Figure 1 (spheres, rainbow over the protein chains, first blue to last red):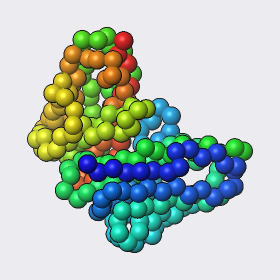
Figure 2 (figure 1 turned 45 degrees about the vertical axis):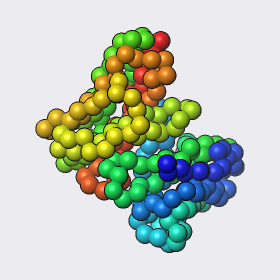
Figure 3 (figure 1 turned 60 degrees about the vertical axis):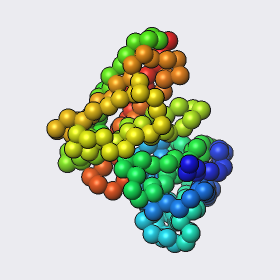
Length: 112
Length: 111
């Protein structure tokens, strides 16, 4: 079945540093999504990418999906303590009602 | 606009019991999906409902079931609970495209 490999698994950074994480798929996804999950909460949508090669951003969070639609990248610029959490990429194949395929998550720790 | 509401937030059951979890989607959202989240398996798709019909189903045993009501509210049920069913169960809703808005989840512990 479809798989998403997300890396890195965890990151420990200093406040103010930039961060990059990525997901690689074994198959094509029509839509790429990035979510952030805080402890005890559900995932919150950060950004959605709908087109091959699309580059978009949500404030300090630029993200893009490369032209083959099999890879996506999320960057965080000038990290702040509230960026701490688990970041998930997710892919949607187009005709799969409600079904997203999620990556394993990247645990981000930001040291003040 | 209220978000996706899930109840209860926490519950503890014993093996062999059954459990029902409830989800109220965002007003106007007719599609409701359910996911199971565990440390080992991550986020796994359970099923999706739209207009009271199950349109998609993940790879879970028949002990996991769900339904949707005419007001789009949804419930999921797990019968004959096993220790491995301990997880965070997440409900998500959407208007149409698969850009899901998740609730805070129901954390189930099976003893």
